[in-house]
Image 1 (cartoon, protein in one colour):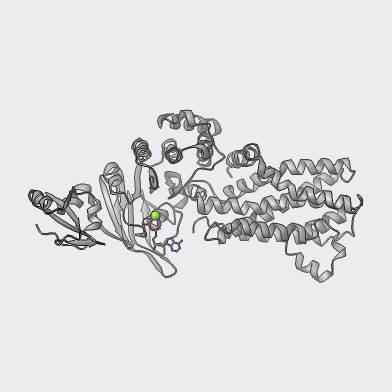
Image 2 (cartoon, protein in one colour):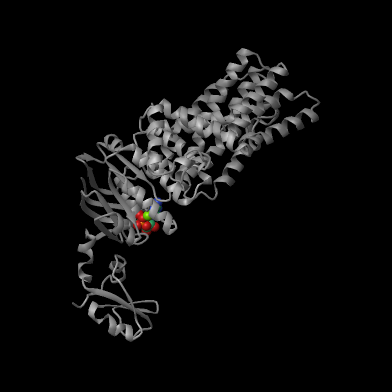
Length: 239
Length: 278
Ligand SMILES: Nc1ncnc2c1ncn2[C@@H]1O[C@H](COP(=O)(O)OP(=O)(O)O)[C@@H](O)[C@H]1O
Ligand SMILES: [Mg+2]
């Protein structure tokens, strides 16, 4: 494993992106922060914990999904991927580096939301560690979904539309910002295909906001592994 | 030394390569051919980015399938239309690329700086690439090739879309590479500027190969004369009548209102299928 590459890539492409293209960072925070505001006003503060936990999950998810645009751009437009295919770098290094860079790119949002979590007494140290683990799984899942999308596309032109739609479906429709038990069970079953659903069910239970449902953890892990296997295939390293 | 045997590639119904057998062992080899001739497909197979449908490729004694990891250590490929990442600087590109090839950070920084200096890009090394000119962007990739010191460098249309001056700058930087180079182009001028050996692709096949001089041998002591709607012609392209005539008859055609042009590699394509009278 080329750890140096993974670090330097996430530093250049994650951290410097924040510095040199800050509008993207603000854009990625705009929706969750607006929802936080709305939920706070409408529920008189009562549903604030959902808005905070949901907010951090949705930031990580939409940044990872938007990674499809980068991965497709790298593969189809600027041919960055091919440059690395014809080199000693492995597919795993490349995929890990991109995943790490989206995690880095999400860091300011994560820090902001974690701070809010501490301010509003939703988080403690143990809960923070559990939250970070879930964030890792979610980043891995959705980055691999991004690789699948990027690998399936023949042209770059639709990628921004596709990622915008998926982002909304994955973060607003699913029980990210609202309690999972208020929607019909059948509908919840359908929503379970998005890894953010089991993640939310688990976190809402773990944070004492809703009934705890242990089955959500294996579902999340299995979905993450399944997406990793598919991402690994669809990235089209050597076509 | 690259040995290619019976190489074919199909994309669904499209037969992009139809059995290519060739040996490549010159310092700089140009592959020329019109758009869609199969140049990119060929380069991408040789540089391990694309699996062939059938056939074999052997690079310096290593098989493209069996020894793929060994081959990837000694090659470098700059894809057609490759662009640097806009927010990253040339030096950051070199560092990243060299680290991908296994360099340490300090080695990568040193070699990267050195290569950028060699190509006279020192003053741009810390400028985000989206602020650079097209020629400079291309040279970022040539600098990668210079710094990597690999055995074989593949360049797929390295100067397409550049203005003439930038093109010459990129040529000069390519000339500084010590590696063996295989480049594709549809600028005949580029092939004759940079390489001695030329391979001509047409519709997925190698139709001729040799030195520029070999390929132009049939045109020896000839000129191309052309005139809109001229009565005499070997080839007609649209309304343009084109004829190949001996040097000493140039004056005669000038007086008939024809333009007289020197022979270039372009004439290989223009004259395709024409039997030249000697
Ligand atoms: N990914 C692809 N899918 C389908 N057809 C392709 C693909 N890549 C190239 N082709 C087709 O294969 C032929 C050769 O293309 P290419 O190798 O790009 O030629 P060149 O580089 O000489 O222009 C063309 O007809 C092209 O349309
Ligand atoms: Mg091409």
